[in-house]
Image (cartoon, rainbow, N blue to C red; front, side, top):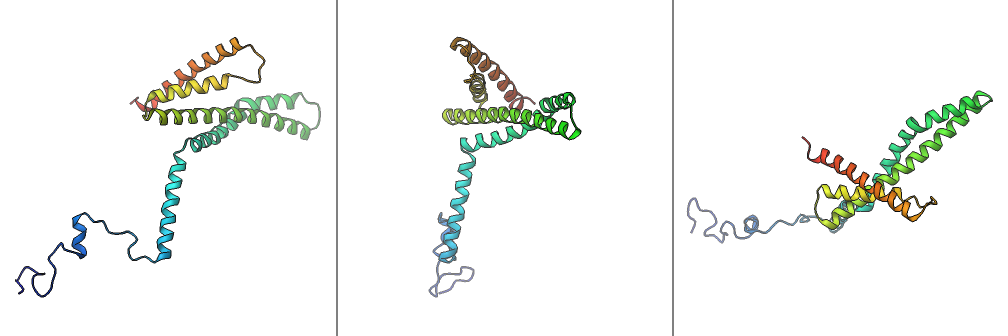
Length: 198
């Protein structure tokens, strides 16, 4: 028996919300792969796995340290040319007695040495700081100003260790301690300004 205004009763019909589209209202999410062929389903799963891998890789400390090293190297090249390479190259080119071509060659070599030195220093600084901050933040499981403070200390001590320099252990330790404190204070000030200053 069919009752007007209440479809689904009688005639073998189903009540609303029982099976079909109504089943979704009871907490059952539709399958996103429904209606796909097996090949399309495999491709979709591979795309999802690739996206998850890329997200995980971009959040890893190794990726962050590498990206910071590349960025630091680029900044170092610029600073090396502006502050170190240009003036030194001009001085060497002026002092050289020879043709203009030889002077230019000497000047470019001097600038390249300065840019390489600055790029190496900035890349090492960026990789050490970024990697240290990421490791510290992962270990502490929180994001605050102390991560930058500890990362700055580690970076300063690492760069000031100067393993190739022939200095005493006491002098090296003092040098690393001073660099640790100075870099920690600088990193904390920068992070405080970027995060909390309005």
